[in-house]
Length: 350
Image 1 (cartoon, rainbow, N blue to C red):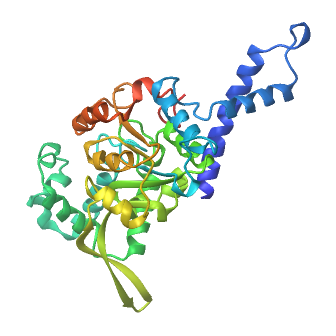
Image 2 (image 1 turned 90 degrees about the horizontal axis):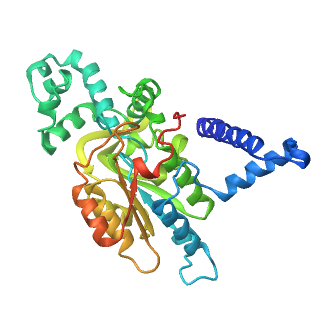
Image 3 (image 1 turned 60 degrees about the vertical axis):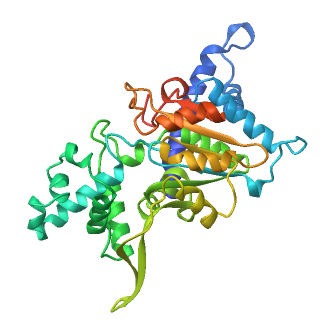
C-alpha cells in the first residue's frame, strides 16, 4: 500500500501545483497585485473539492456519474441508498487499465512459457506452444478455449501459490508496454482512478470483477487501485493444500476453477459479495450480464460502458463490444468515450 500512497500522492501533488499556477495567473488582489500564496492555495483546494473528477471532460457521462452519486447519497432524497448497499463492480482489462495490443496477463504467460521452454524442447514444434514462442499472432487469434486452458495450465499451474505470486510481481515490476514503454501498472486510466476515489469518498465499496486471473490481479490491485485483494473476483484455477518439508502450502492445479466472464460474472458477484451492485462499469460483450444484473435491480442504478475510440492517445476498436454498445442504447447505459470524455488518459500523460 505504501507504493500506492507515494505514487498517487505525487500525482495529486502535481495536479495541485498546476492548479496553483493557474490560480495565480488568473486572479488578482487589490490594485491588480497577485493574491497572497495562502489565498491561491485555498482556491486550489476549493477547486479540487468542486471537481472530484478533474481528468474527465464536462459532458453527459461525467454528469451522469455526479448526479447518480448525489442522488444515492442524499439522505432526504427518494433515491437514497444505505452505504452498505453501495456496491460498485468494475471490469479490469479495458476498463481500469489498457488491454491492447494484448491482455497484459497474456504477456506474462508468454514470458513464463519462454522461460519454461528450456526444459520442453517439444514445444518448439507443438501448437499452441509454438505460436506463443514464435509470436504468431495470426495463429493465436484462432485458438479456442481448450488451447488457452492448456497454455494456462502449463504456465500457471503445478507450482505453489507463493511461487506464482512472486513470479507475477517480478513480471509487473519489470515488463514494459510495447507502445508506451511504461510499466503495465502505469497503463491504468487516470479518470478511473479518480472515479474509484470519488466513489469511496461517498461511501461506495468498489470491487473488481474480471475475466483475468484473480491471483494475477491481486498482485497489484491494492497498490494501484486501492482495492484490497479480497475484493477482487476473477478467473481461477483449482487449488490444493499440500504438506511439504517447509510447511503446508497451497498449490495450483491444472484445472479450471472458474472462468469469470459473461454469465459467470453475476453468479460470482453473488457468491463472493452477496449484494447486487448499484453501479457496474465494463467495456465489452463479456460485461453485458454484469451490467444487466446491476441495472435490473430496484432503485437507482447506473450502468457504464467504456468505448475505446481514441487511436492517438490510446486505441480505437469496437471488436468484442458491438453487442454491448447496441444494448447500451436500448437499456440506457451510459457510454463513456475515451476520446470525448477523458481529458487525460494515463497518469503519465501531460
